[in-house]
Length: 431
Image (tube, rainbow, N blue to C red):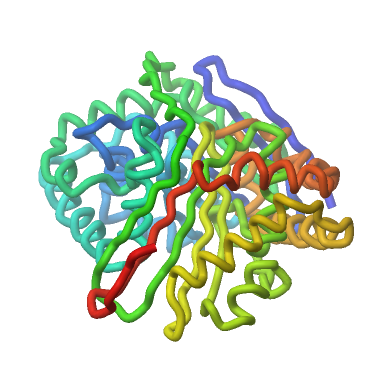
């Protein structure tokens, strides 16, 4: 099995990441732009996600109605994602059809049309998508918590944007955003699969290198002050289920604390995937909160999540409250488990198990060619590919003392927001 890795940068600033994987005649092509909701200002929230949608509305060379058909005829798949720090587009195709992905994405980098009628049509689609999310209890709760937890940083805004902004953003705003950020010197091209690196680099140069570098004027990003007091949020709405969600300020991905925090999350709530593109799931039934909340029937389920981001963000713990219990009871039990982590070092055996599960989850999230190409580019969005290559070895070094220090540093009441979603027909709601 050959896994030859090669990186270079074109004269126009486009970073190229290539990884040969000769296990199947498949190639996955990902184009990443360093733009997401982090780069948005009030009045234009959701614009990065909207621009992503417009990239599927065609160019003169690839009209909108033909794109799906062209990809489908090869037996390939394609999609796109927008998040806090980035926007990414991918195609996974039979190896002998990879020219299509290269031609398509290099063309979309400069020639997307943004036809006025398509802009208006997509406005309706995205507002409808937003309204659909508003029917989901956890979306409503998360949005309220983010607004409480983050006061000035753009991470406070939902990636889809506010409904008010979605009604007022214009075609000129979208096109300006596209032209400002969709430039080679703000992009990373990651390709993994069955190819020869020299031949692939030649193909890439042919299509991408003629695109001129742009003038990149990144907006300054205001950093949040350290929260100095616990905040509480109560959201009421339709449904039959009560949810409790706690968020704590968490470190960015490129600092040592992030790796220890990953192991703490595995120990406390069960291993979670950092990948946005799937990966095998591992049961969290051995986690401390599963045993103390679910097995004691205080909660129906519990989960946690730590995101790999450029700037400090939020670590979340979510519990689905058992119908026979209250959010208050769940919070008491949850706090007891956090205090245990803070007051006494975890046993070496427990840390080894948590590390083993976190390593397995990470391995599952990078096991196929599409996931390998994903990680080539994703790691570049907040650190570099060295971060991915060293991840497994780094978390292997996490110690019981590290876990205790992370719990004592980050999981403090004054640094959290407690959020409860309470169905309309339920009384109470005081925490």
